[in-house]
Structure formats: C-alpha cells, structure tokens
Length: 305
Ligand code: GLU
Image (cartoon, rainbow, N blue to C red; front, side, top):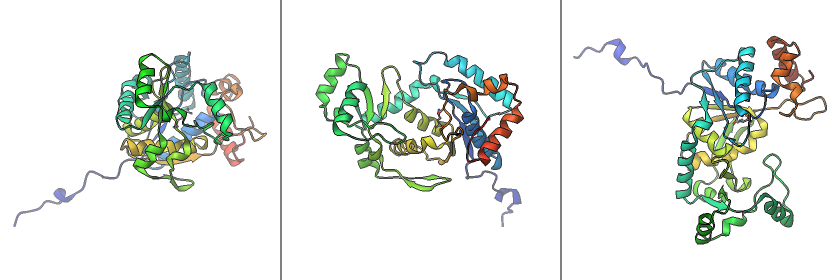
C-alpha cells in the first residue's frame, strides 16, 4: 500500500475569497468628514475580517480642473489621519481603454443607443409627461431617442451630432430578468432594471460614466464588499444590472447612513468647514476628528463640530 504523508492531505489554499473592501473617492474637492466615515467603514470591515482595504481614485471627470491638486491633498489628509490602504492604488483616469472595451461589448449586445437630446430638451420632455424625479437618481430620461432607427442614428453620428450612449434598461431586463443583490443592513434586494431609467454610460467629453467604471473596477480589484453611503443605494441596482450583462462577480454591499448637520440636512461636499484640511488648519488632532465622528454616529449621524 502506498504511503500517504500527512502533508499531502493538508489543504493550504482556501477557496473562500479574502474579504476585500475599498475606499473610492472622487477628487472633486477636498476630503470631508463624510469621506472619512466611508473610509473608516471600509477599513474596519476589512480589519475585523482579516481582509484588505484598497484605494481607488475615481477621477474620470476629465472636464474638471484641479483634480490633481485634490488628489495630492487627499494623500496628505489620509496620511495625517493615519488611514492606510493595501495593495496598489487604482486610478480610473488611466483605464479609459478598459471602459471603452466594455462599452463596445454592450454596443455589440444591442444594449446601448445614442441619445441626441440636449439637457433642455430632456427637461421639456419630462415636464410634458409630468413625471416626478426619482428620489436619489434625479430625472429619468423618457426614452425619446430609443425609437430612432439605426440608419438615422448612424447618419446623425456620421455628421457629427453630439450624442450620449444610454443603456436600454428594458432590453437589459429582457436579457437578465430581475437579479438579486445583498445589502448587509437591509437584506436581499431585487433589482428591477427598468425602474431606473436609461442611464448615460458615455458621452463625448466623458467617455465612461461612474456606473460603468465602478462595476468594472470593483470586479478588477476583486472587491468582495462594497461599503458606501446610502445615497448610492438606488445606484446599486444599476450596478447590479451591469454586473449581470457583463458577467461580473457581484460583491456584497453595505450602504451606511450619512452624516447630517444639526438641522438634519445631509453634509454637503461644498461645505468647506467640514473638510479635513480646514479641521487641520483649525488645530484639530486626528484623534479629535475620530472622536467627533464617533460622537456623531452615537448621535444619529449629527455632526456638530
Ligand atoms: N466616487 C464616489 C464618491 O466619491 C463613491 C463611489 C462608490 O463608493 O461607489 O462619491
């Protein structure tokens, strides 16, 4: 009988993926306390599970000036707060070719159509049908250009008419049905793609969109758990639909509540007083920032500093 050594039967590789979270700020201004709440949530979930927490810079909006300067300040603020991340930083502005490949795949699947409407035209169309805006996603495009023939669309593109590429959510739904996703706080959710409107996935001045880039990159970075503010809860349905059509893995989500001011209003990014840079300048220590965050969380999310 062949001898079997004990080590032959030891399993050394786990098939359970290591938990990976990420912090994915858009450098459209200085980091503020809301960002730090998101970063801390991601870091803590990773640490509590011997996982890792990655950093991704979501700088696809190349029309914005000064984003380089915000990225530099962000690194300074994160270092000051002692917040560290694992692995390599992913920078979305270096990945437009990856997003373009996904976009052409969606086009070849017949799931995108060019939309030639201007903002003013869309507003007028919506006013005419009297549709109320979606609570967090804003106005939903009424689908006007969905009915333009392929020949007319090709002709208009050839003559240089400005256009955006929209995802045909009804077609998406016909293809994938109503898939599920899980939120750690709210439980299992069913995504009904057609309920979210035909979102824009690309336009001339911005060759990808947040929705497309975020699902591609969460998959590329192997993110297993996405923690982010509950203002993005509805957007996750759009992301779930994209994951289904692009055959991408589906992370677990945790949408945390947002910080508010003492009138109950959500803290806005433009509210410079809550930027980390201004707290630093006002003489706060990192510990005081964390303590204030802790107090705010114990106090229904009200940031009172
Ligand atoms: N980049 C987004 C922001 O700064 C967050 C994206 C996400 O967490 O999915 O608001």
